Amino acid sequence: MTEKQARAEGHERSPELHRRDFLKAGSLAALGLLFRHETVWACDASMAFLLQQLPKGESMRSPEKVGSLRAKDFHELWSIFTYIGRRWQTGEFSNVTMRGLRAVVRYKTTLTPSYLTEYKEAAEILRCLKAELGEQKALEQLFFVPQGATDFFSSRLGHVRRFVITEFIRYQVLQGAFRKFGYVNYRGFRGGKYSDPSRLPYRGLHHA
Image (cartoon, rainbow, N blue to C red):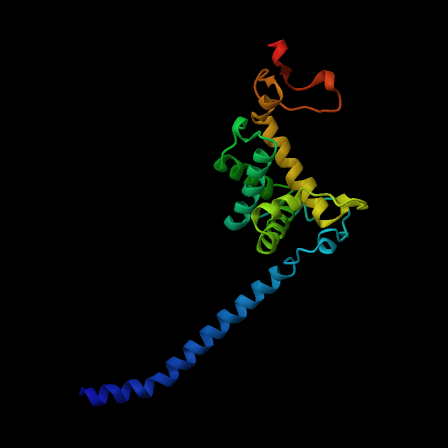
């Protein structure tokens, strides 16, 4: 085949290739818009959005929905967990590693009642807050309860506080951070109710 013939054949085939590439690009673009549509709704960092009341009230949303959390969503949860340690200076006492927290999150999203929906939205909210405020101020916003807020724990921000932040604080304390407050291990790491100060799950240093 001569060079001229090859160019001619390539020219004849190119419209079909162009159409195929165009359709493929169009499909990918449509898919991208679909996924964008699924997530863009949460990219509102306004306090009005964060305090919006949820239909389920204070109850966990979609506890029957199980699945795996995306790596980028887990990364946002890990940043919340480490911020807790920095804010209360308990991180150095905690035995929880990124791998350990990932195992806990996997357990809590693949079995019912599942935290999958709560974790996904908390990650999305933090991601959107970071885009507007930067990481430090975004994390601070998650821990901020506006003065005069009513039915706080029925709001989006309230759900983050209840089902993510509070859970992570408890887990961090139970996994070694209790030492920050003057307690030592008692018969292994074991939790309990905190309603009765005289029956805390750990004994103080003066009882060691």
